[in-house]
Image (cartoon, rainbow, N blue to C red):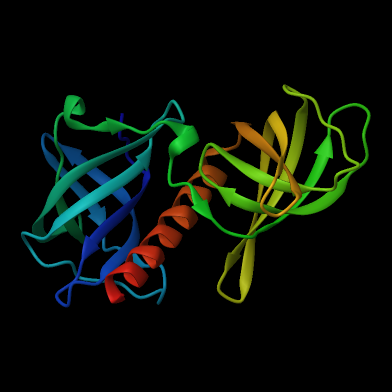
Length: 220
């Protein structure tokens, strides 16, 4: 399920009880020992040394493009094949949780999206109202008509510091509706297909936003 070279996201609390998100890659799997490169913190771009016995949640995308997570503990550090690595406890597969895509890290955020309908229909640009690894709600003009199961090509522009990551997604319309509170029309879409790199990028972005929300709640 978890393979060599997989990108993983490690979620943990640091010594001052702040949520931290770091990315790494799997270097070795031996029994219940997962060896990964030293993780890099998303916000700073710096390598982080996670203390031994720190509890963590590890997120990854399987070879079948399914999102999983598991609870683990940091077991320490070592030099493996001349490379500094972090050792993480790897539980059995039945202790890993498969996350439903439609509910995977859904966050409220406004992100630019370019929409290209399959077949007839003109390209248009809009914004998300919310997004997850499995779908999104898009703000659309009242004059636009889209039917359930219509196929769309989306280019989603994810902010990344002073830059942006553009991911390509094949999506399908689920429904359209008007929000009576705002009188705006929304279209919900399900993500049908994207490559592994783009999916990892989207998952990591959504986790990062969730951690930001948790920090705000903790501060309040």
